[in-house]
Length: 246
Ligand code: FPP
Image (cartoon, rainbow, N blue to C red):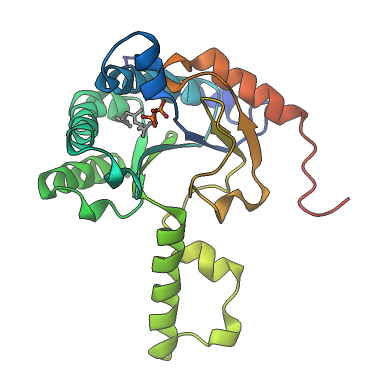
């Protein structure tokens, strides 16, 4: 994140009312193809969009921005593209961590990131630890993330507790599942954005999206910016959220 002023605390209750926005960042490959560039160029431009949007999230008073950077299904991509994505992630953390920290950002990760390359796991954990005591917005990066895998891990965790007699299966409620998910201490998800015109959730935050508003835009991820985020939040503000009531 480029050097910016400290978070504007007067903006703590922004008019849009959203606390947590998540984004399925889609369309890097198509962005590159339109320009006759290799796919890596699209991913590089995608990282620039991440920087812009992380900054905008803070300026717009969000408490949490979750970004789908690498899904548990992305391992099906060619090895060189996976290596490119991991390289970009590594460089992003190395290059931007000081700025994030200076701006009070708390970096978090959701997903089974421990399956990544050990030195990358170490880099991620050091970045998360270094920023953990900050009080600004959370930037949560979804890495090796799949919602079904997240729910499976939560189910196993609860089953183990039940088998050990530490929880009564009949007492298990929504709050126990919430607490067993990777997002346990993140605010409830308000708005889920997907770029590039696709209208599906692709195994992203399926449990958390139960009452989230969905927003789809044709814009390709590398073109997404602060104005696009503000537009999505404007649309969110106009939605009538009833959570099953009247
Ligand atoms: C989808 O575009 C995008 C991804 C699979 C990866 C998203 C990754 C980044 C934005 C860069 C790395 C992120 C961080 C946080 C440093 P696609 O390749 O599926 O595009 P296509 O559908 O047009 O081919």
